[in-house]
Image: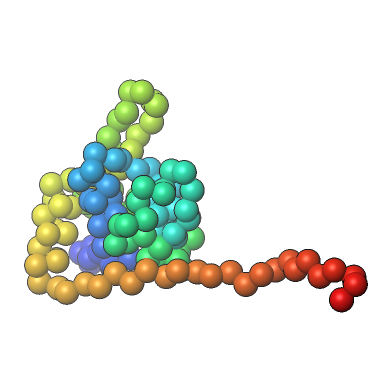
Length: 129
């Protein structure tokens, strides 16, 4: 049986959750998706400065949810219960935090943000021109 080794995408997920946990924020999988995808809204506006914001634009929500499930299965992540919202949110385990710290000690990782600019899709052109 092969041992699970986190991919670069997995590390970006772990780093996102780690950074949020350090500020006492705990995301669910959709929150992680919104940050990695670079979706700016009232919920994510406070996190645009994160190095992983808009860093994994190629992944869809379903794939990120699958990756999070694998990270939970292999004890890198766990759930934390919030009694106010009656929901479960993601947090790094000690094992996950140690792995992340060791990885960044031995590897130089650059997080490149992908700023999408959208071309104008609807133009107003007056008839008199």
